[in-house]
Amino acid sequence: MKKLCETVGFLLFVQGTAGLLHEWFDWFRFLGVVRRLPFIRDYALFANIVLVVAGIAVMIASDSVKEGKEAGQGEVGK
Image 1 (spheres, rainbow, N blue to C red):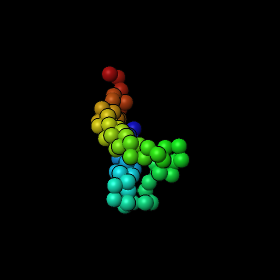
Image 2: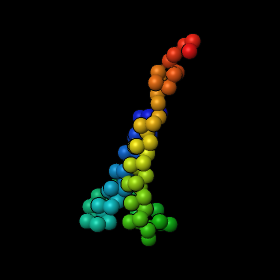
Image 3: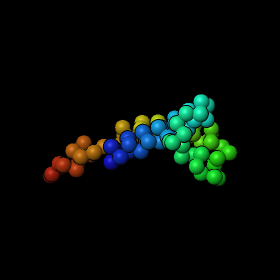
Image 4: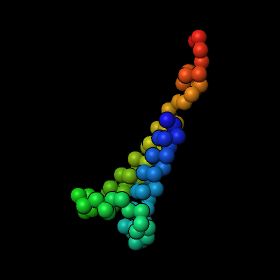
C-alpha cells in the first residue's frame, strides 16, 4: 500500500509539474492532463498547482502507512 501511495503521489506531482511547465514555457505538450479536460481548461494554472501540492502531500502521507511486519501482519500470537 505504501508503494501505491508513493507512486500515485509521484504521478500527481509529475503531471502538475509538466502542466506548469507547459503553461509557463510551452513545454511538455504530451503530458498535460488538465488542458485536455474541457471543464477545467480555463483554470489550468490553478489546477496544476493543486496537482503539485496534492502529489507532495500524498508522498508525505505515504510515510505514515505501515506495511507487512511493521503493521503487525506477520506476527503470530501477539
